[in-house]
Structure formats: structure tokens, C-alpha cells
Length: 234
Image (cartoon, rainbow, N blue to C red; front, side):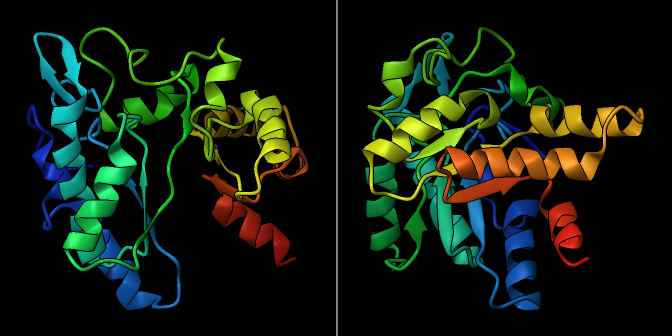
């Protein structure tokens, strides 16, 4: 969580802030670990939105240079890959140009291609105080009811569990590896149910991971990762 927020979200590319410092620390401690960094502004802006605002309007093109600053700062800190999750149009191309210009030609990009304006993000937004101060994110994130829109944007699908039909069809249509994100709301529901003694947490989590893999996910990004690693070592 950044130490300060402003309208532009400038703490997102501040090298003294927690994300950049964490990347440096991880690279120093575990040099062979692949580090992927999330590129977005919502956690860093006072508005809670993912872009520059002018009179309650999200300015897509004006946001792109700021996202480029974020990506370059993360690459400078040591990230191997950056993952833009803001859903601004044209950000992948802009970030690629910025990384190349800064000399980070080997830093790759994992696009959040299908990110839905989902209620599953609630716990994350509460934790980082990034809920929109006005309106919602439907003008730049995808409508959960619109299935066809996904296939205009596809590569990474977020959230995963409610959209496994999209994952399966994506895998059938494209040769690219499909990554899914097992997000905060899904994680919080499992943890809450486990704490209440209502479920067998290990069995349920592993069944969930299997369902995502069965649907066609090549990569699963999940908050359960540390628990899963421990279970697999039994």
C-alpha cells in the first residue's frame, strides 16, 4: 500500500514505494524467481479509478504515459514481466514502446485482456482503499453480461471462477497460453468458510484450481499459492 496518493497516482512509479522496493528485495533474495508486477493506478489515485480524471470522465489517452512510467519503474526495480490491469485502450503497445526505449527489451508484458467490472474485487479494494470515489469502472472494464466482448480482448481472464466458460472457449480459439486470476473475493469466501468450519479448505481449493486448469488455464495466479505449495509438499 503506497504511503501517499494523488490525482495522477504518482506513487505508482515512485522508486521508494513498497512495490518497487519489494521487487528489489525479492530479486536480491531469490534471483531465479520470476517476478511479475501489476501495472495500474487505482491503488495510487485519490479517486480510486485506473486513469486520469477530468470532470468525472476517465481520459484514456492521457493515462497511457502514466502507465508507461509505472511499467518502466517496475522494470528498473527488477521485474521480469509487467501485467497492465487497468484496461485502458492501447496501453500494451504504449508500454512496449516505453520499455524498449528505456532499454528493457527483455521485459515482457502479460496483458489483462479480459477483465470484468466484477463484485469479486471488493476485498482487495477495501484493503488498499481503492474503491471508486464516484461512479464505477464499467466504462473501461468489461460488462459481465457481454460474452462476445471477451474475444475481442483475450489473453488473461480476471476474475476466473465465474468465467470458466470464457476460459474454455478462449483456449479452444487461441494458441496463446491463457492465464487466469483467482481474485480477492473468491479467496476471501473460501477463507471465511474455512474459518467457520464449513468446508475442507485444502480439498476445495485444489478442486477450484483443477477446475481452472480443466477449463484451459495454462497459468493460474492465485492468493492461495503459498498454501498450495505447502500442500503439494506433503
